[in-house]
Amino acid sequence: MPGCTSGPLHPDWRDRRGLPIGQGRSAPSHLEDIIVIEAAVIDLNRLRHSCGQCSLHQLCLPETMAKADMERLDSLVKRRRPLTRGGVLFRSGDAMSALFVARDGAFKTTALGEDGSMQVIGFHLPGELIGLDALGDGAHRCDAEALGPASVCEIPFNDLSRLAAELPSLQRQLLRIIGRSVGRDQDHLEMMGRRHASERLALFLYSLSERYQALGHCEREFSLPMSREDIASYLGMVIETVSRTFSRLQEDGVIAVRGRQLRILDGTRLAKLAHEPESQRLRG
Image (cartoon, rainbow, N blue to C red; front, side):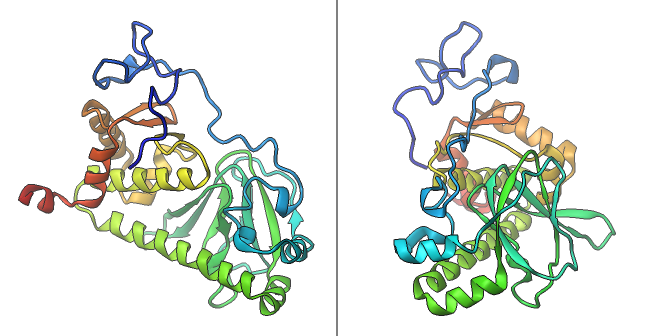
């Protein structure tokens, strides 16, 4: 995992003596060694109304589209009012009417598990499409709700389909987006297949850091918009195991955590935990 800065990753991460972490000292081993001043990880205040001027346009549908084609797509987009925490975009069984782009804030998708409980099956960051689950049979197979204050762009699906039939560039971009979604699903399956909690959490954090990097932000310091309970549900773990695993990774100097602010201290070690099961590491 490449570093995003040459010095301390954030000037507000300091030890008890007031020295920036990363300057001449080892990684902290305890949560109380870190003093964090709240930082805005994703600044979307400058978002404008058109797709071409939106700061997320490199991540969304217009990524590789010509200006004229982008203007045609922009004419389809509806800007929805902001959502509060728990605001619902759609529920399981709803007919598909539109695709949504997370414009500000993050979302989770949940589905009913075999035991009758709701399980988190996905997270969506700004610039990522929500609602692809209904492409197969036209009905949503999960619920989608905001993790906090959020807003979305709504693209009516029938209008989008007609436009895609006319614009090869839009067709290609839709395929890329579907491919990314499939890739995230594969990552999730790999997480669930790991025996050790540290490997599951490491792969989750590594994947999340790559998505933040795609947003144009430092991949080694970011906010976790989801709760520990949501992470536990997503990884098929209990909350106590998630908390212990966060503490263990922190004590080992792999990450530093303060509330929902996370900093990766040892990217190489996190990558090894994420991509090499214990059996491979032991052989190495």
